[in-house]
Length: 90
Image 1 (cartoon, rainbow, N blue to C red):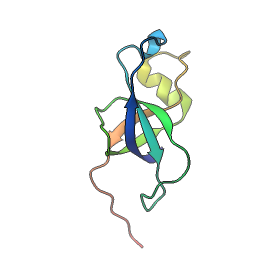
Image 2: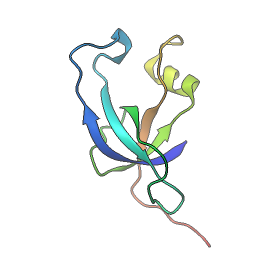
Image 3: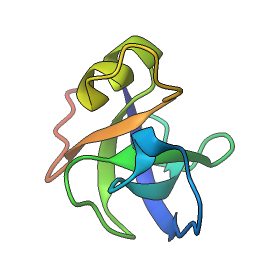
């Protein structure tokens, strides 16, 4: 699971049936200090996240497919939570 920031969304005119009704967001991975790290990628939203939200993203394919209830779906990542606060001990 990764911390990410939602930086946008996409709209498609045609898509695979597994994605119908799913909102697809552009997310930026974040490091432990919540600073951008790495390249953006696409993630299906299950929690009604929006641009600017810090989210938890599951990038393990099997977990992502389970949320779609399709063991053969081509799903790489899903947004599974919106982060309200982060508390760290040094």
